[in-house]
Length: 252
Image (cartoon, rainbow, N blue to C red):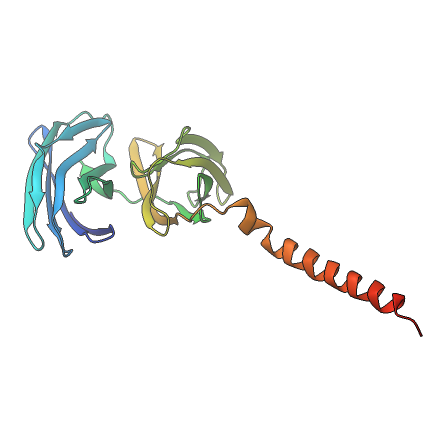
């Protein structure tokens, strides 16, 4: 299985290609990143979350424009049921000013059997400054009621204090799950890739579905900017009132 994703910083564009397969008793993850930007990326580190276990490669000090960087990561198979499991790939790096960025990718690995789930979703976001929320619409298209775990995966520039929630949905039902997020180091004007992982067990199988989305970070508005319109209206009204009384005071 191959995934291609792109994450952009101010002068750096990191392209990620991921291949996942099972070999023997291990999940093997091959990650290649290419710096498509016009300046070097620094402190590049590739990691993968496999069934809750984080595996990381050694840090690469710099990656020049158009240079590829590949690493292989592996973790023992600890899946309890056949099915489709998510693998989260994280690429950390900094710019020349040592400002940190994160590129996220989510791929799947099929264990023992290939399955396709029938729980779908959609991410809805609004621009954030310091804090915000992500709404995940979850719909159950299975023929039976399902207990679905909803997990929000965000880059390290953002945080979700409560990133996991659970809902029980009857067949055909839909529910919106709201997850709060906070801004740690996200740059205003930037868009950040996020994912909602929907996982559940049905009969003897495990299912997962990763819903991708993005969230925009905006500059925090000052109090003056927030009330600027009201101040302008008040000033105009004051001028009109003063003019009115000056006209009334003129001798006829």
